[in-house]
Image 1: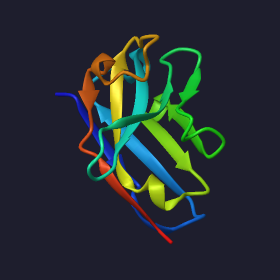
Image 2 (image 1 turned 90 degrees about the horizontal axis):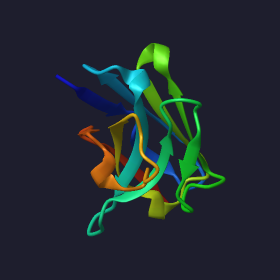
Image 3 (image 1 turned 90 degrees about the vertical axis):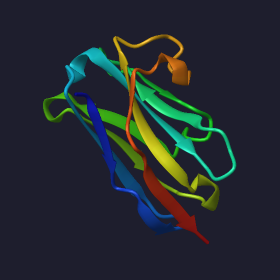
Length: 125
C-alpha cells in the first residue's frame, strides 16, 4: 500500500520560512518523480514544484521561483519543499504527489499516480 505523508506545515508570519516534508512508503521511491501542489480556499489545485526521478532536475511554477526549493533524499524516501519569503497568498493546503518514472508534463495533476493527504500552510500578515 502506497502512502505519502506530508508534514511541516503550520502558521508563520509573512516573510518567514517553512520546510515541508513528504515521506513515501510502499513504492520504489527512486523510480518516481515527485511534485508539490497546493490548493487555496475557493481555488483549484495548482502546481508548485517538481523534481525528476533521475538526475534531480527541478521545475518550478512562477509563484515558486526564487523563493521555494524542492529536493529529495532517496535514502530516506522523502521529498522536501523549502519555502522562504512566504506571503499571505501562499496560504493553502500543500500536497505531495508521486509520478512513476516521471513525465515531461510534470505540472499536470493527471500524470501523478499517488497523492498525500496534504498539510496546511497559513501565512499571516
